[in-house]
Amino acid sequence: MGETNTLIEQRKRKLESLREKGIDPYSNRFAPTEGCAEATQNYAEGREVALAGRITAHRDMGKTQFIDIRDQTGRIQIYVKKDLIGAEAFETFKLLDMGDFIGVNGTLFTTKTGEISVKLAEFVVLTKALRPPPEKWHGLVDPETRHRQRYLDLMSSQEVRDVFLNRSAIIREIRNFLHERNYIEVETPMMQRIPGGAAAQPFVTYHNALGANFYLRIALELYLKRLLVGGIERVFEIGRNFRNEGLSRNHNPEFTMLEAYEAYGDFHSMMELLQSMLCHVAQKVLGTLKIEHTNEEGEVIRTIDLTPDWKQVRYKDLVREYVGNDWFELTPGDRQERAKSMGADVRPDFEDFEVTNAVFEKRIEPNLIQPTFVTHLPKELIPLAKTSRDDPATVEVFECCINGQEIAPAYSEQNNPIEQRESLEHQAGGEQQKLDEDFLVGLEHGMPPAGGIGIGIDRLCMLLLGQDSIRDVILFPQLRPKG
Image 1 (cartoon, rainbow, N blue to C red):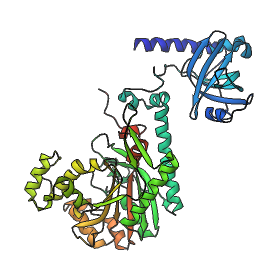
Image 2 (cartoon, one colour):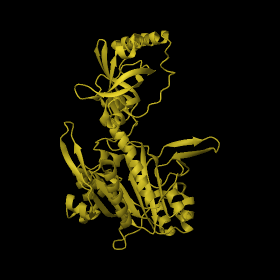
Image 3 (cartoon, rainbow, N blue to C red):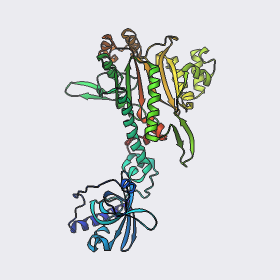
Image 4 (tube, rainbow, N blue to C red):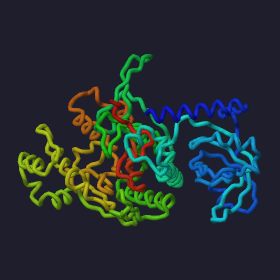
């Protein structure tokens, strides 16, 4: 800390020296003609360029100096010679530090070592950084610093910048794909009187003017289905959900979801939608359908192949395969004991279907690395889906699992208002105040048969960008308070 304070004081003195020269580095303006990468890509000997960026490297050779500047597109070397910019400007240049922002005017040339560079003619100080940058420009190591001070992480690592630039591109291509299929993008309320569409603990807030509690939404579903009732036949929303639950490698209490609904579709049409969408996004953003995941040493530890056609398997068949052919012949008590012996997180008050699902999440889902549609889930798990025609104990649902985690569930949506009310009443445990009556009334006006899907954008980015933690694909993840 003492060393940092000394460096800050040195930079402040340089700031005062700049001001004594009549330069205020926080008030200057500059208009770049292009990005650093564009200047390199469009190289022509002697072409004039105007570039701006942060100083990320400095090599002092007396009357000649070299610096690197970096902008969002990349980096370029700047050649600084006292004879070319004049003695006064050269003295000003020596007041610059790593991390400062400058604008440069000059001409492109190639050095003796073959590096495309800019021969500096003049420069403008745009920002004086008072704190030094991270010691290692190639990347921070401490995950706590990386997540709490994401700007330092972005400053010091091109790989990190690429993750978040690609995340933006992934969301853009999802939108493009859905727009091409005539889906309408909408926005629905984030504060709701009744948080529905999922079984999760909500965040609660209070609306002073209305004198009532409101909840941050836990899902997008019920408002989007109202739009199906209203005649918008293909609809989607990309937005934030909030669940007042734990933090983990796969969970952040504030997360981004895509939900899409298509009138006259079902869970089979959602399979086609998801498979086509992910292939489109991967090809457009990454240029491949084979996604490599590496370890810290950069060694490939798995390759996920998104090439169609993806595997389809029933939930019960997977349970039998992984935990025993006799699983569904056991008594509920024996199932609970076996689940505990396998390390599943089960409680004495769990219903029988919850015990099986805990085993699924513990022993089966982590092994589903290649794209797998797990179909026909128990009806108790999903009260908003239609009952399977060939097995009334299950619903027309799939969960798409890739890389050992659920990426997207999809349903043949329940549009029978009587059965929907019964399912939601069972889920609410008889507490009428938990029922979204407005949604149920809407359903009674008639909703067309439809397929619906939800995709966790953060988990999708983890998959496509080879990241092992959700915190590495969220710019500012929630963290425990310091101390």
